[in-house]
Image (cartoon, rainbow, N blue to C red; front, side, top):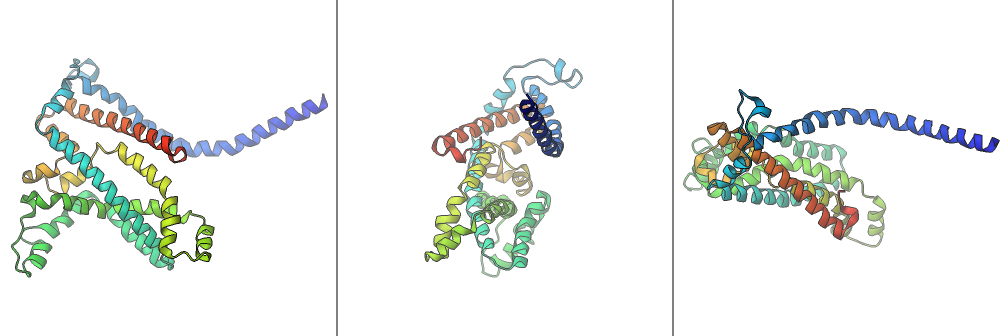
Length: 316
């Protein structure tokens, strides 16, 4: 009897000790949960606007239902194919090129032995990510302006080449957008991959060095394979965003030039422009709802496929 009582007391003490350890963790999580609830979940009730003919005088809930009319309007436009193609292809190009450049930069910076130089390179690569698209658009204009731009006046003209009216010629804009997006976002992606590389056990490299492996072989057979979980996680997140586009990039950088619409207009830009012209909040909500559903389905599909071939690399 005494042994049973002592066992119960010991179990209670363990529970108390465990709760003392867990409670601070929950307190730390609480602000993040509140932010998600207020910023991400409560606004989800607004999705009802996608199925309503919104009348501000009657409010959201009293406005009449209009079924799928908002979705029909979105896909009935002749620009539907163009904006869908641009959104998908740009996102694929951004991910492929961004991943290759980010991993290359992370590997190179990891090889720098001077801590001061390494921190300086990391800070400089992250600096564009902190700039707003408005600032980046003016920097881009400084290069591309037909009258005062650096490329026309300092490169093409001294070489005897004709000036290019960049904001009226759509030929170069897929490449320009890819370069600008890579330049701005590469620092953020590089930091993620660099954090993964730093976390790799150094014993692997020491063993490889003893076996006579060159630096390239160490990167190829140790670094790159161990970056696979990080790559797959970012791949799943990118697939979820593949039907969305960075509004600032596609609206600010081309400066909303009508001559470039066929290569710069994406779904988000089209919805914004339609909203400005027609003030159709129902259609705008339908487009956002459509993007969210497709993104959610794509995340589940990508995670299912990854889980099927490599369970440990799946996100959930």
